[in-house]
Length: 287
Ligand SMILES: NC(=O)c1ccc[n+]([C@@H]2O[C@H](COP(=O)([O-])OP(=O)(O)OC[C@H]3O[C@@H](n4cnc5c(N)ncnc54)[C@H](OP(=O)(O)O)[C@@H]3O)[C@@H](O)[C@H]2O)c1
Image 1: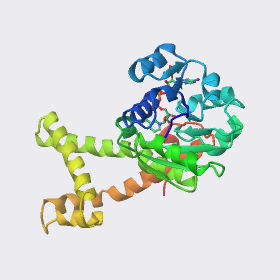
Image 2 (image 1 turned 180 degrees about the vertical axis):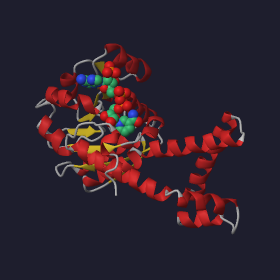
Image 3 (image 1 turned 45 degrees about the vertical axis):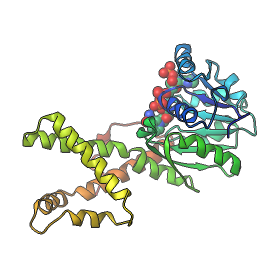
């Protein structure tokens, strides 16, 4: 797929490495077709040593040679990096951003470049188990969309959405999602320790319960609503009924729903250039 096409990573960090590893291990691209540029020579040389890709500390020179430029810097570096790449990228090249919150308009205006794909991966992408929601500017060709799909597939599952507004929703649901899951798991582990399990045993019980439940849900022959699976483990007057009654009474669903909505609003706010603020500033604003 990427024979005779150069992919340049601007920002050679954890996510760039996850994509590079996926592309090479899945034979989607060869090392000689991949370049990575960042401020520290030792880091890009580390990637060269591991994967055989071409290292550079010159963003502009690297991006100029590429058919696909992947922006994988931190959001705080975006302004500076876009300014350095303005009018440098080939007009027919594709720019694929994995930077949280950076809108197509912001990238396009900053670079003076029309062909932009914006994506929102999540943390499990680092082990190829992520899910990425992505969208493309109108000028992106179907061939470029296919290239974007293949690059993002190196991080795990990917879902294309026609409209960019889904990216803020994805940020709140799947992008931030691992934080909710880890908090839920942490609370379960602590409860297990409270009951009397050694912490390591409680961690194993919780991790395998979550993993097994997801597999049981997804790997069934007959697709089923989650509520039905929950009902299956809820016998009248039993332990699940007692626990679920307490969770509902404590507003578990409402807390989850409001948390995801808060993340959604914050994503929109940050996309508009809203300043970071301590969470307590918004405390008490909810109904
Ligand atoms: N990590 C995740 O699970 C995750 C999930 C979803 C989305 N994302 C998005 O993915 C992007 C990258 O995240 P990450 O976790 O890979 O971050 P990271 O490991 O910190 O990588 C960022 C890289 O950019 C380099 N860099 C800094 N300034 C630069 C510049 N001026 N030009 C070129 N490179 C520069 C950094 O080099 P130094 O180390 O030398 O500063 C570092 O190698 C972020 O925008 C984030 O929003 C990440």
